[in-house]
Length: 113
Image 1 (spheres, rainbow, N blue to C red):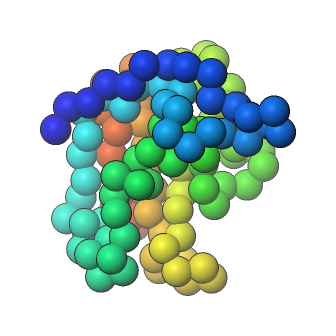
Image 2: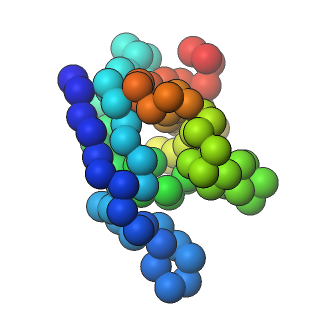
């Protein structure tokens, strides 16, 4: 599956990403079998997570990693988001990584990295 998103201003006045406003292109989309199984088990929608990622909602990363992602958009580095499907359960974490050249975005489990 191949998708592109136009870059547009994505921050609200409070500095929070606007849902649905892509800040960078995702390129080719890929997902591992493990993450697809986890998403199915928890009835989660991968496209919702991809939309959050593209809009700059980095999920469950710390402040330093969120800042690193924001800088990565400026300087052309890899971007990593983390979403926990069941709060407090680290076994339900989904990582979404967009490569530095924005050619590929992959959804995977941390254990598959």
